[in-house]
Length: 181
View (tube, rainbow, N blue to C red):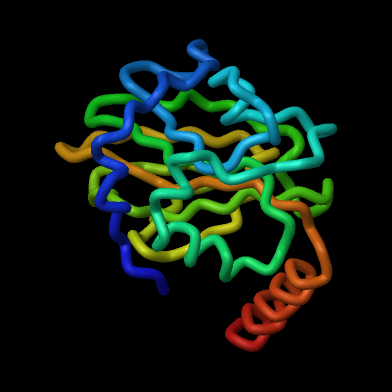
């Protein structure tokens, strides 16, 4: 488990409003940490198309060694990485991210950094995402989020290509789940 802490400089960064405005109400903002090489358009820095192939650290990530350390522990090809903040009273409406499933070759990982007990993540059922943990979420299924708490909800969210390391991790998790059943 990672220590749920923000990069000391991250709080001074200017975040951008999430570009798919119809998917949320309130304030959902993003700081891009990895983006397609050469990309400067904010919307494309946080949501790369499936065909993008070269991804690089943004200046924000370059200034956050702890975030780099966390990301380096994932031995798979990382694509877009971003900090996503949902302020109190805001919601992310139910939607799907069609490309993000193990079966389609790309996984979405959430690492909660700051959260609260009144935050609600719905994905086939209510999912409690504890700060400092890492979660594969099959985001090609309908999902939504509501921050009903009094503090910001901040997650590091990244997309990664499935490789042998990811496959072995999933096989191990499935075997463990089967042994516990």
